[in-house]
Length: 325
Image 1 (spheres, rainbow, N blue to C red):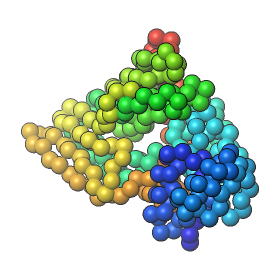
Image 2 (spheres, rainbow, N blue to C red; image 1 turned 135 degrees about the vertical axis):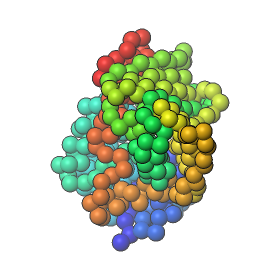
Image 3 (cartoon, rainbow, N blue to C red; image 1 turned 45 degrees about the vertical axis):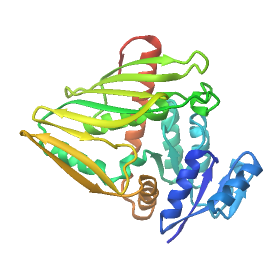
Image 4 (cartoon, one colour; image 1 turned 180 degrees about the horizontal axis):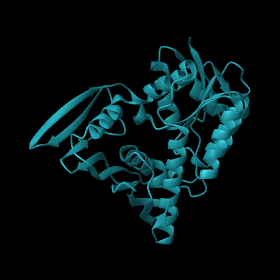
């Protein structure tokens, strides 16, 4: 069965997802919705969508659309995911899912009431690299995990970009640091008991342009993360245990082949993990959730927990204090 997709928004990430839909043998980009008719038309022509809707409402009213990808700014995720659910659409919502825990809960409540699937678009979680990483960590190969480190940053100077917009809930933590938070929680296997964040807020943007944080977990694991929008790009993840370490040089956007390096017992080994385009894999994943009833790679509890941790880190950075969870 081929599923019809619609995309809310026409930004860069919308184009990335459109190409991923095109890669899926059982998915088709049918429509796009924008607040500007010209933008919708141009995007539809560029990405091969059959229909261009001049409003978000019109896209949700399209009965032939079964799945909606919400690529709108962070401040609009909750509003339009809830409206999509009420329109009977399954929703893949760009990360971060929400800007408050109450928003996240309301989004999942709307999805449950409408009997539709809602999944946060942490595409890296759909790549086989992450399941293999979990297997390595839980096998005891590196002993008991003690420290998790992750990083995700890029350099950007265009202050008109929505990532620098405080009203739209931009900022480094919301944009890329949320990946590091998700990664840390995934490896730790539980929610943090306390977080501490430090940030440099832009004089003009008023959002966190550089962010570092520490998460303390009840099982004795410490996680450190750094993210930013104004310094040289970096990505990576490292896990330190009592008997060894694991390194993942490309955690966020692995491709056809990902690399995991394990050092334990005085020996270093490299494992190459076959995968694919993670954006395409997440399209396939949510469709399988609907078609086969399989659990989503990113669950309701996971998304709500991540939202809570991100919000606590921002509170910590703004108030200069540790925040208990």
